[in-house]
Length: 437
Image (tube, rainbow, N blue to C red; front, top):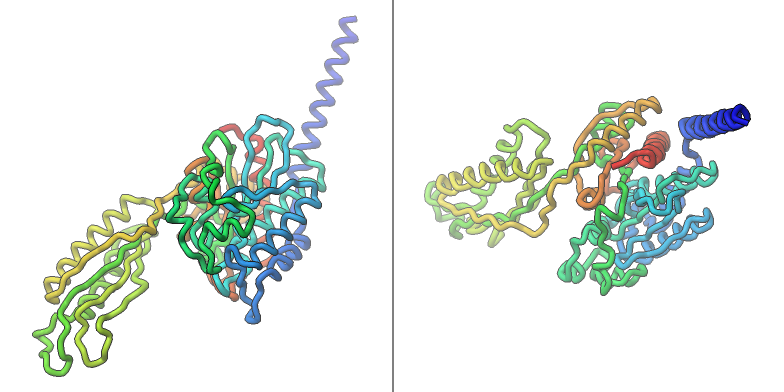
């Protein structure tokens, strides 16, 4: 009797091992379908493509609504349920084996800037759909539930992910977007309910992790000939309006050494920003992107100039220190040019968001396993992952952008690059399914 029982235990152990081995082996060799992926990207691009080949699928527009309806229908046909939350986020959910396990979320956005490209955001969303379809057709059910999130109005206000992070207030709802609707009106158009916006908020208890696949929107990976960027963090940014006050006077009768020319001061300021930012080691950037002189006549010395200042870096403290240097230099420029500088912070601040080091290592392991070249890098642009990182362990995957072009009809990433990125997304999700946080 004991020998029979031992045999049963032995054979059962062998069976469990074979099942585990076969599952692990099949998952290791799992790859996404490049042709289907490319076709689905092209199909999505038809919603909002203009005569110039650009993308006019701005948030809350008719094109946005049509694309969402198409995506919902496609996912439903796969057997994946979808719903729209109060913030207008379109969410697809596939149940896992463990009902009490927290969902693994992944996704991006499908809205675009006016006359934008067809890869920014779209790659992460269509890539997420491809991951789900690959799992469905291979009969792979994860332990954790899976959630594909198509965030609302990323380009206009990084709205949907901010709502999930609990950062939306009435002032944000009242902001008018590129579609002509306010955020509140737009959310209603796509099936949300701004009156219940607070119900969208999630915490660390609600999600296991979050992943976003995105085009780099820069030229680093492309120039280096690398396949994958492992994002170490998304830079914080701060904006200021800079008002420079001099004295308006006649351009013909006022000697050069007797002028209080605000434009001369502004010119020195622009050069000073570049000099200070580039003199410090690191990947920080500083930009003066807007300038306007008053009264703006060719025969009048400008008595006032209003310009802008933007600083970005992964270290919020570093941004502060660079600004202090710029402010000090501006004061000296004011003394030298007989003008006065005034800096006003603008409510466009985003704090730096670091990705989870464990997920970075997981992405790296998958890149090595799949034979893809990679590097660790910061993201210089804002993304939905920036807000998701506040509430759950977050990772971000970049693929190359040809010539670093984005927010343009010329934006492009090759089908081969996209396939590699989605394979990394797929295997990272499967890895997260085996990872405890």
